[in-house]
Image (cartoon, rainbow, N blue to C red; front, top):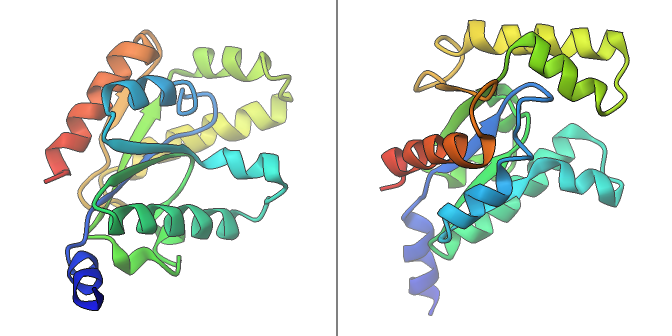
Length: 175
């Protein structure tokens, strides 16, 4: 039995993170991802906020621990939420993954503003997240290995077209 556990832990699996600035569609795409990727576990990073966990480092550590346990069972995970490599690399369980891949969801400024206004965000918060979205595009080639692809959600049907693109990305690296 002890040898079986060690064998499973030696076969590392990749971890997938669908990131992006607020309003890009990360949470919205989760249900469809679960439907079209039934053998992959998909999580919303923000679910811990509902439990009162607000520290970003703790949130990342919890999700990587969950994903690690799932990987040890031979399954792949996708975490949907804003997470950057320099923060994820500090997590206790980072080394348990073969590689961590990132994909950026992005929408244009007008769409982002509309989506965030529907959440009653202030002008200042909306501008901050527009700036962050722009920064993600600017660093997608230099701060991510491999370079982080971007899926535009402005006019795409998030539940279908976007999820299909994410699925293709995951399957590209899953083996």
